[in-house]
Length: 416
Image 1 (cartoon, rainbow, N blue to C red):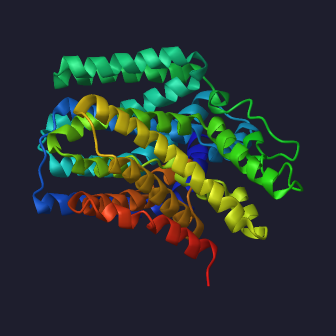
Image 2 (image 1 turned 135 degrees about the horizontal axis):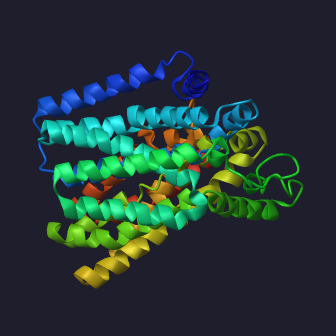
């Protein structure tokens, strides 16, 4: 039973013939060899590596567990007779393998290539990955008592920071992992099912039905429904709100890190970094029904893309305003032209994100975590970093670039 359940979930995540797995492992090996041969080295403390591996693995595992794309398969499996413990551990094992092999593996390869490590530290990082998978699954299964998971995570992070000894940290992770196994031993498969997802009478999730309602309304009200859709969609996906909150924290802390680079010329670099807000830039890719409706109905390019671009712009602008306020407090005043810079970088990244979604939506993904960590997420930030370098070298170039988003929008919306 355990083998059959695991095989069913594995085929969904890795492909019918597990074709995705060797391709991913090959990429990890290429990245490792490329960095290792290049001789690029960074001094990273052992506890920092453990925290990076643990936090990243736990975060991706949580995304995989909470993905709505697993709901259909999980519902079908729960309708069949199953053994409680076999089902739980096979489900956790497959999602854990997916997390470690397809997501954490790349980070693991980079850390091994750019930092010096000992065999005991290698064992510690592997143990940390296994612990993060088990702990995330255990906390998710009892997510009703969210404060327990918060205290548990805080205790683990504090212990890693203050213990410092590899053996002590390894024993701590081993004990914590066994505790997670005990929790999973007591729960059943229904603990991973997402109850209470409200749906429209048509069967579509309530947070996705804002555009369908009022479909015969006027153009103005239709635009209003789009804005309601954007905010309701984010409200239904709490991890999207969490990602935005993290970006705001980065905006507040970033001036302190950029202070050592000195000069106002680094402010555009901060704007470029803050454009890395993945969830709001993949709306068409993650909602296939919305994309089908937008492309099928006439005149939807302008009716959808303009509000969508403005929505991303406002999200980016909020982070940029926090960044400028934090810069003012920590590093002193900034030139007025940096306000124009904030507007340009927020608008330009929004326009490029919408263009990518319209012309190059992400296809063939299995669960939402694939969208969050797709390489395409770095395209817009890299372009913004290049533009930030140009503006930092030639500040007057900013006034010329201000017309660029408008030209791109006109060419896109009103092609010849």
